View: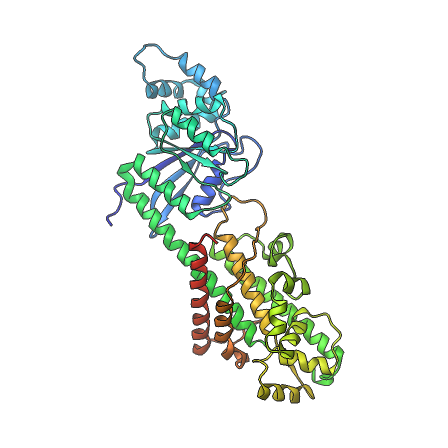
Length: 471
């Protein structure tokens, strides 16, 4: 595809608090752009951001101050008419040349200047608001700028949205081309349709908008790939991690509890690092994983990794107890922690955290339980980490960068076949403790790299299917 002839200039205009800056944040994938606040007139000057495709700027979006007094401004501009043949653009230019443009109508003047030089104007409106006369006056002002105007309905996912009411009102004004784009609950399809609608009204820049659409598709694929790799690294590190029990008291409950506490803290910390990598993969570098864990009230991520409640929320308790008999049940004991474990429980915990519950491995670890020993996370922990990672990614794929609240997680029931495949891939990691990067940098081992790639590939395919299904 050839390069666009010139950069597409877009003016983002609308009433105060309609979500103009929020739109800029989500389109630019920059949660730090501008200031988002329920207070009126948060944006007091013009700010801009350039959107890139293949590393090249193809569009510049300019955020403008809110239109606070469109009724008064329209009356003032009508008073400037000197001839019945004065058209809209000439009246707007006449207003912009007067002192009032630097006085009572400063914010409106800044917005209208950008509208006059733009290739297209995005009129952002809060779809939860009732249609009022001021909205009609705002649209009249923009129409007089002589540039194509595309109404963009924001907050359409909110249950109080009046989307159909707005569509009908806009159609009555002759604005049949509209777009819906919720800046809080992100929808990739709505973003694509927004660019398509813009291409219809600014046809000279269709190539730029096609480039943006394709770039966003690739960006989404890269985000899912990076996030899948983060989960795979976490699982391989956890599967291969070994926590020694102090030799001086390998058979005592105190030594086991101390080792178990250290294992749990190490894995909690390592999972938080993985979640930070997942957040960064989707452009949420400033989100705090600890905040996500503490403030999320829905799903598995709001619960401590090693609690009984986490296992119940994950729906894994019965599965773990049934798989592998006593070894599976012991894996739950190891996972939930905080128990007083004696020598017999130690044998069960070690069984639950090793390669499986085969007789050969069982005898091997029973012998080791009689002396110095190691603890490992059981398969139930790996299942839970996998589920939590998928939950987080699912939430981020539909999270706009203007979202000001903590991440809301909806737990997903993982396909048992998918979980089984992932755990099977992790089998080799169990016998290679040197692969683990828990608490340190992982070894640069080619076999480990191949293992991570295989696990990441299975996770990526599963995630792409979830995204395609809207999950």
